Amino acid sequence: MLDNTDISILNELTKNSRITMKELGEKVHLTGQAASARVAKLEDSGVIEGYTIKVNQVKMGYFIQAFITIITQSTYHQPYLSFLKTQEPYIIHNNKISGDGCYLLECKFPSNEKLDEFLEDLNEHANYKLSIVINK
Image (spheres, helix red, strand yellow):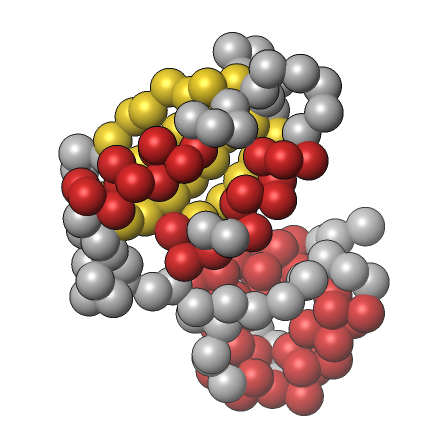
C-alpha cells in the first residue's frame, strides 16, 4: 500500500527521474538516505518498473507521427506481429485493443514516402485506419 510520501516520490521521479536522492528527499521532506531507501523499496516491490528518457522525435529526424488502427482478417495475428518486427525504427507502441480494431499502432516516420511504403507493406497483413498527428 502506498502512502502519501511514496506518491510524492513517484510524482517527483515522474517529473525528473535523474534527480539526486538528496534533492528528492528535500522535496518530500526526507533525508537523502531515507528517500533512497523508499525508492529502493518501490523498485523492489515492482511499483517502479524502470526509468526512461523522452526523445524529441523531430530532432531525431522523424517528422510524421501516426496512429494506425489495425483490423486483422483472422484471429491468427502472427503474420502481422512478425511484420512489425521488421519495422522497428518506425514503431513506438503496438497496443492490443478492444473496439473498432485489434491493435492501435503508434508510429513515427521521417517522410510521407516512408509512411506510404509502410502502409503498402502493412496492407499485405491487415487492414487499417490512419490518423496523422497534427499538433501535440
